[in-house]
Image 1 (cartoon, rainbow, N blue to C red):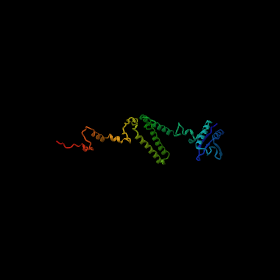
Image 2: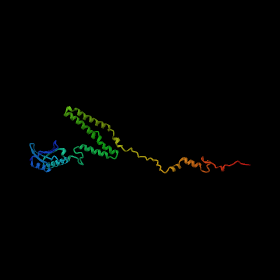
Image 3: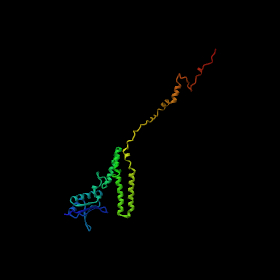
Image 4: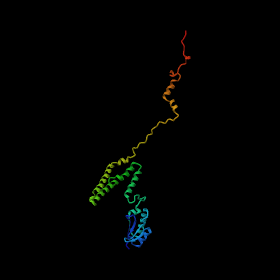
Length: 247
């Protein structure tokens, strides 16, 4: 018995529709998954209720496709309804596997602990033959050429892709000689030198500071007995002034 070919897709109205379930088993499996059978002048088809939330639509469509494939039906499931291709811990960007690889490379770059590890990680970007930038440049260049092959009138769009490829080439040239410098990152770092800062004076230390100032020390030395110097601000009492000598 020939296995039916079933297409599950989203229409322009947003409805999820399964077409091609002509045998009883396929129709039963679709009903079991949650689809409603409709028969009109367009023929038999199965549709999810329009009130079904988008995440439930994708989960239901994927579940129905898995059951139909287990029953040996050929199922064409729209990528937007295939939860196996959507975000998972192992595939965080769904069908954008190239972007997911670059995302993992970005995380690797951020987790490096020395210049050599950083150089090895960045090499996946900058390698002149196998690096990510070279692959991006080639892809942009190929896209421009393919546009020209498909439509001669779209030369302006093709030129834009060509210019973008040249920009990537300029980035490669700018970073071509950075490998050795990356390996030395962090090696020339010198230890920080500690600098002493003057301790702040406490509010009650003004008298102590004045007592230890140079002017105070000089005044103290000049008033010490036996130094031979008189205090500039002192006067001798009159009773102690010697009078004239008499013979």
